[in-house]
Image 1 (cartoon, rainbow, N blue to C red):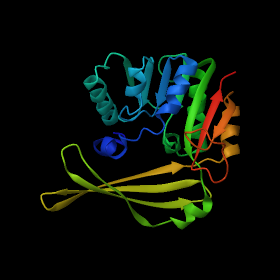
Image 2: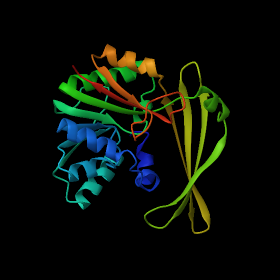
Image 3: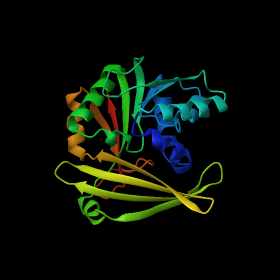
Image 4: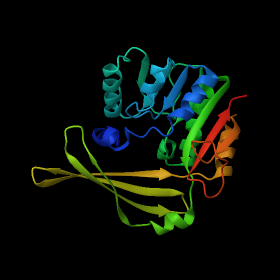
Length: 251
């Protein structure tokens, strides 16, 4: 069972309404024309709106539970036959292809916990892309001072309500290994049910990358960094940017 299967129950209530990145991927889909593949696609947050616009798209994830949620979402929208869903490890050869667009959204690439794993995934993408194909990666922009400041703190991240009306408090804690560039993260979901608190604890690791490290990994896989943005509005990347939004091309 994937460590993210337990996350599936909370994912849409926690992240499902986040669509700040959708215009960026829509623009890339229009530019490339499809077909497209989303690696680590989760519950289909982006698959559904892109399929609604006619993009031929495949979603790959290692979590059967998240893919079940994605399938349910797509079928409810009448898109069940328009999107291909595959259980798979993105470090291995990707299904189908060749693709004109591949992307990994909101930090999911950082769940690959070593440079070797990240390199293997990029090599899989490069193999699956057609000549001229585009890869987009949405990554956290690491600030060592901020990482150290948050080290070990337990923070109330948000309150939200599940589809069945259950109120939830989400707490986040992380400890950092600066040498290995890894955040050991724990999500804690506290559900208030009949006067009792039902707690779900989800620990996982995330490995961050720096700008030129990313460029080097891409180059080792035969991919050229075309652009690096600091926001979904395509602002120039700098040290204060909240994210690193990389667009690479297979020449």
